[in-house]
Image (cartoon, rainbow, N blue to C red; front, side, top):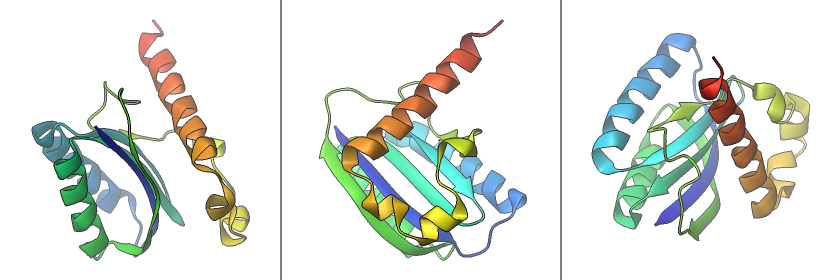
Length: 136
């Protein structure tokens, strides 16, 4: 199974557009056996997607051609045995404080992160989401 992390800048960011992206992604990802998470802010999309290699390659090609994304950069492409987000067709990050400040992003913090750093951040997001869904 392929796991991919990329970053981009939203061309235009608003909550309605984001909601539309998430609805479409969840529907398509469920159909294509893709799972993952999206960190989204006005200055950043940072996404981990995982699933069958051909499906991941196809969705990434669509993302790079999507006018809603600017400056798409592939940060990691890896083969993995287990999914990090098996429960979610597309989890959206509700804790943006786990990520970098806009100033840190401008200064290159994401590009300076190692693949292990990026995976650890997404693993923390998954753990937090699991604990929120398990809470009574």
